[in-house]
Image 1: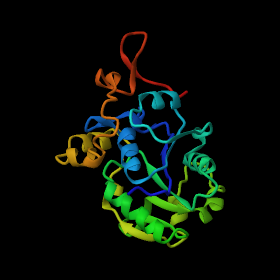
Image 2: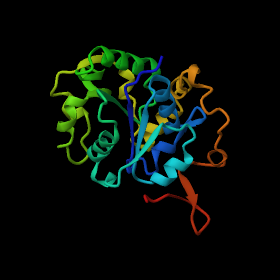
Image 3: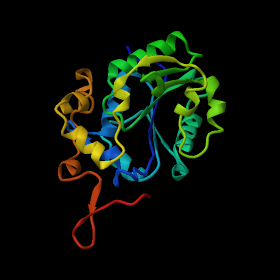
Length: 237
């Protein structure tokens, strides 16, 4: 059974260190954003995605649809503004929200279910993934924390506040596997466990199974042809 607690996926960044939008990088036949939306839809009845840089392109190329899109016009100011934009868009009566990032392909659906189950038992408590004993995202942020989040600035996310509120922690070593640079991408793509990292749970395999994106199959999803005929990274819009 899926939870009524909303899930908020942050996918607004420019991926400057990667050089191209990591939201559209593919693993296991799906983009990273498609995969995380599929995981979220498998555990929640209310999935929200915050876009920013290249927002129209990201939405166009996304084949597994969330329930709601949120555009952060202030995405360039950092992650804090994307988190704030997402929280402002959520229903007022939400007890809290499970926050996910687009670049943690190792996080499994079972872990998300554990986080949400704990949140349903303790809706007023912060629930975080644990990495070497430290609280990290994915994390459940109760609504009582949202006023504090409104004061964040720059490229600061929920992690900065989680360490101050003594959250309930559920260990998740896979949360440390994130994608920031081309070397990170190469390491994950060519790892022997790629198939386990990339594939959503089998229960999600039928989601949007007929909505294949031919444009993704034609080449790199994050590149376009320049005037000279070569490939160049798409700019933010």
